[in-house]
Length: 146
Image (cartoon, rainbow, N blue to C red; front, side, top):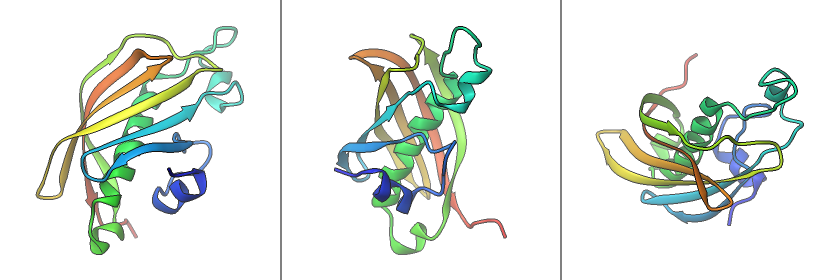
């Protein structure tokens, strides 16, 4: 549905911090599903952890936020699309299963609410159908810093 080139037209993130490879399902403003292919080439694996590479949980949460950002962007008006999204809160984060090189994250986000420029979403990340991470995220769009 949306490849990496289309994703990079929306998100300002670039390697090594772009955490979404593909969008496979989308209902703008309601829900979105993205994929992240986790490879041993990720720079964070050098230090997390040598001899036992595990994807940091905060980066899984960041991947959820990026999928949510794409969904919110596509549901926004032209004026909002000129802005950048900023994290406001992370609640109820739970890390249930480690994520290793070779895994593919299926990241599902669903809108809890969107009002007065604040988006709240429920995010879940799965590996092979097993829940790895979940969290509630809040973000807003703001003017880009000069």
